[in-house]
Length: 337
Ligand code: AMP
Ligand code: MG
Image 1 (cartoon, protein in one colour):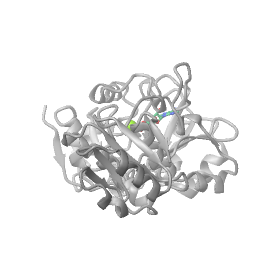
Image 2: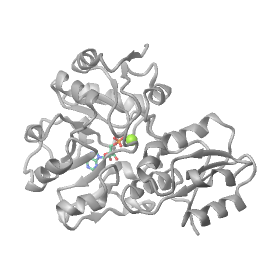
Image 3: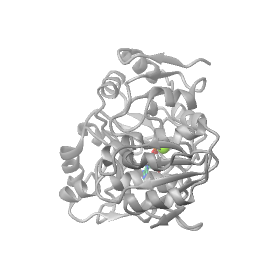
Image 4: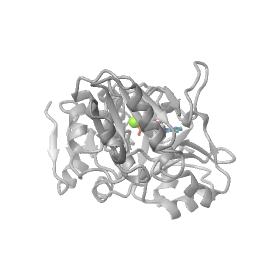
């Protein structure tokens, strides 16, 4: 099967493929998603096959606006609408009690469902033309870094899906923030494009799920099933070096072997003349780092490096999301300096 490569103008074609039960790569502001009609359980099951995704890891339903929430969710708290007002369309997913019409394939049998209203204009055009909720996880093979360009998605999915729509590089670069509204206080399950500080401004107290900052033990079950898997990982093992930029750069320069890979902030690139270096942006610019982190991780799979060292931002603002993706890529192998 060949994968169609559609331009951003060909949204009607993409919508038709979705309505017919096809699998379509869709640009969003966070990362590229692998979409199917979220009301068609069989089509949704094929997402799991194409990605090699564990069956117990539920998908997010993408909708064009908060007025669609009531179709698929029940007992919706007022906080959901306050969050929608503040952050939709945008990179925020809310976990809400589901209605029974949502296929089990979407929720992996949970009684809740993740709901998101994306802001990417091409994605919105596809959702409106398809006129169905689109179930979509990130468009990578399970375990690999998420794709932030159509080419990255094609690398993983060519021949396995019906089409990829090219909407350009993603503007956020890390997946959506996931907040669980079925518990008190609301709980951050995954940090993303909407920051913890922004959520707290609307919600007051927000709990942070332990899976955000540390490895889950064998018997532990994080509330977002996806957070228990090693993730975002290039083939070579990653070691995160956390601490002030100068200190972490000095540590990596002292410990990296010639030919190792280094992910670093722009200012420090010249300190690693014998390594394979990928910069992700200035040390202070976590938005830029978020846009580049997945491509940096992916890039090493096209090299011969056998070990990767990474500088890491602190947890303020978008730094929490960037650090979470790096730490997961490293299997939480973190050296604090
Ligand atoms: P992906 O889009 O590939 O990042 O995957 C979606 C993420 O949302 C995974 O980490 C899932 O575990 C999480 N997720 C989806 N639905 C739910 C839900 N009902 N409850 C908790 N987490 C969810
Ligand atoms: Mg994913």
